[in-house]
View 1: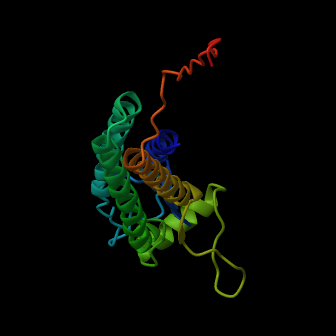
View 2: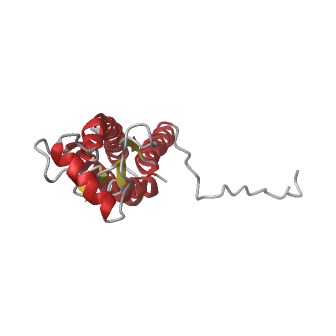
Length: 207
């Protein structure tokens, strides 16, 4: 269970954990800080263009390294049944879960900056971009008091939350296996492979 959960967590690290959407496009980021950006170029002539925020993948790299170490320790532990590998598995998966949680918190803190990338500016360049976008049929012209418009928004996806669940589940499974191994070591059950043979001597005539 720990091996399956760890593998699932490693795969989930490459999915989009946070997305932001607004008038000027959409942006998504995975745990490693890789950004997928689509834009309508509304602010290409604006004097204050939205900046791409620096998103680091430090916590995801740390979680990946811990998961790889845990998977190797799991394979060795299945083969050798050694408490050292059980401890290494538990410690590695605990580090991985801690890193995944911190990665989710870190990406959530970048929501405002990612949201700003999809917003439109209201200077002359932004107004021209909006008019051209409306003229080409890809948007609507915003006139005060005549309609409604959606603001930019950002939020976490279910992939990041699922990665937290799988990482914590893997850690709990490793702890349970470690406790079972310690109990088996402290209270070994030894089976006797030699069956006791009891010979009964028949009574003699003298008796």
